[in-house]
Amino acid sequence: MDDAPVTVRVAPELVFLLRPRDRPARERRLGHDADATVGHVVQAAGVPLTEAGGLRLDGVPTVVGARPGPGSVVAVAAVPRPQPVPRGGFLLDVGLGTLARRLRLLGLDAAWSNDADDADLAARAAAEERVLLTQDRGLLMRRGVGGALVRGSRPDDQLADVLDRFAPSLAPLTRCTACGGRLEAVPTAEVADRLPPGTRRTFDEFSRCVACAHVYWHGAHARRIEALVARHR
Image (cartoon, rainbow, N blue to C red):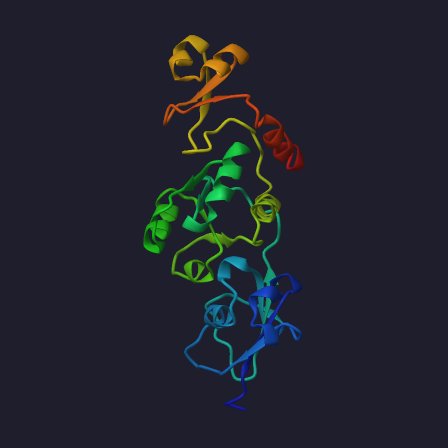
């Protein structure tokens, strides 16, 4: 009995995190280690703790620090949706730049840098009280990282997943897509020297980013933006 493996059994929503050969049974068996906690075995099965909702050890609600015995079964539920929107907003890893711009289009505070490494992301998320959005399971398994695993290979699917998970209030076209700063209306005269001639003749309402001074107007791309906004209101 001392050699009996520990079984990690996951909810249907988490099956994709298991190895392909373990998915039909929705469980993975791991060798028993007397020093391993529930949290250790859940992550060893491939499930970051950020994706785990309720945990049960041999049918009884448990905590990540409990220690399974030989032959134990750890059941992992999915995180309930929607989760509260983080106070500090979102922080996206380097591979999710397109998603960051789409979140900003919808008025959400979405920080992103194309050269941040894992340590930088973990430190910034903690310092600014942001939830870290990533598709890197290893990053989410770092000690002290609070985040969410983004599902989907296409930006449309990724955006739908984040909005479903957090259900944030949207304020479309109020943030700069380049830096995430807030936009404020600005008189045409203040930005006229930065506008193409055709734009000056065609449009009379402009906004400017308070952080990077990028100028925006309701241009030819407006229909695409409005369609994106309409899908996610």
